[in-house]
Image (tube, rainbow, N blue to C red; front, side, top):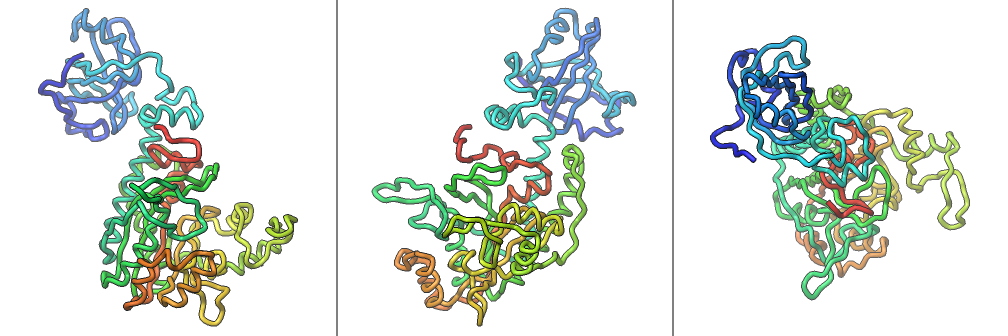
Length: 449
């Protein structure tokens, strides 16, 4: 194989402008296809910015070199030096008249999966060969959008006065209870992978930093096998002192609106590649009470299985809303909306119940149609009430000593939320399987690659 030598890429394909016409530039990428027409061959070169036609002439290259290059296997890596020439007959509006090609690496043939999309593969096969799958423009578009989303969220939260933190992912006990944890050996003790930064970010409210956020991994050992669940995902979490759930919802609204705007501005071509159209949502998002939705679902005749009898019955207040119910709700609420005033029994122990009606909580969810994107609310800041709620949830307060200590020495009222990056990306990119929004997803069946 040949080396780069002193060659370096001058531009990606999508960076070429009319000012580059008639200039000699270096392009680097992969051989997507080759069409041979006698003494002329057309190489489709693909890089991160797109594809371009490279016109290779035997007279220019030399007979021996030409005969070698025209047989290059697809997906071989090459560097091309050539003149940019306008050509209105090709999609890009220009092509490269090749002067010289360096072959940096040859690809094996045949390819295990199609990179040009002509032969479709199932999701498992695509993930087995993820590095090849990621060469497809429509797959790359997802991760370009993901990069914009996460960097924009960080910038926006910093502008909102939040301080970025990083909390432990190896913990001694459950964060919220009710969720299966990944167990691991930690020297001579048992430890777990953290399901959420919740306890740590709440503890930060007692420090005086007031507003904190974290963008990081979270782990849930739930044995789901659906298009919406992962066992490792990226969570965007905030916590804010001297605040209630309405303040937290307003921050979430502003964040979502600005992220939409950022993606439309910076990733418009990627959205086109994915055949997705968006407009920036207008705040405030619709707010609907849980009780209103239950009444609507009762009118629709939605039945659920009774936990005690195992028999079907009409959904009632206190039941979680199943996916079937969320799809019915989505017929009316097709975009972004909040569900508020959830039953306390359906939410984690740290959610503040309403004064005068402890069966109802200060919790909310942010949904897009039937998809839950974020969950949050005002937290309990009173230590006695927090201990009571721990016990009511079957948890032992002594196992949460480090957490409870923060509430004994001046804990202000506070609120926050957690937003799943991959669920949000499903909305933005239009993908139907959450695994498509993760480079190397971890689910019940997949640990490699």
